Length: 291
Ligand code: MN
Picture 1 (cartoon, rainbow, N blue to C red):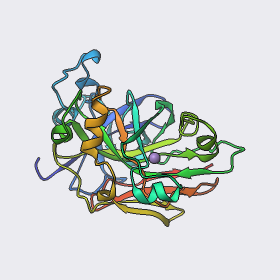
Picture 2: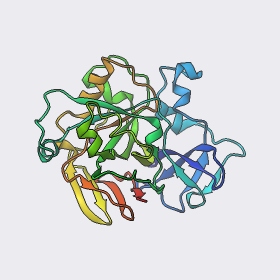
Picture 3: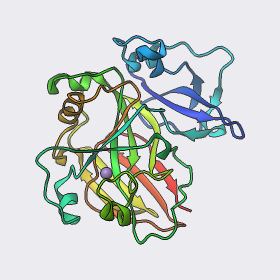
């Protein structure tokens, strides 16, 4: 099994509201339309004590070893609709975590991480349309790497923090600048339904291993490159952010951490399509048609 890459996500049978947790195996590339899915019990729930799980378990290990559910979903991915890959208790975001983005917005480079939440109702699976709210001047895309927590993390040290990550996916921190500028907090500006596209899947990643600094987060608008930056240019790296957050709040399996966007944020219009990718480590494509 060492030469196989495991992925987990959530899908729906078209026409049915219920989401199912599935696992996929690839040779390292992202799952494609022909990749077989197998339904498993939710490994993130199984690592949360108050959901009946075990706080010492990492959802990643559970995801890799779970037996496929007898009579569960099977067959090629193309017959299913993608849902957000996890259903987190909380979505934590880091603001202004790339120098060039802070500067393009006319902001100072922060001395400590700027943290905010997005509501779980903002999540949107890859391929699902985002309905842009009417009557605003500027709504932007923000291409971001997203870390998925695998194990309960409370007051963890920076050099141990990556043990608590199950894997990685992609996110778009869609931002209504009209409201973000006018409001004191970003709750409205970042919180509309659908303002947190996420996916397509969680790529399970070796525990305690950082992603390469030269992997590049890339954002495209109608196939035109708009954002392209090495992960190593983050002001606060993921291990630091996780340690910093965990001094205040317990991170739980399935929680998402949006790590911030590089420069090149771009205004969105109905009819366009946003695509976000990571070059260097294939996380697949997070695709969002705008309506
Ligand atoms: Mn952001």
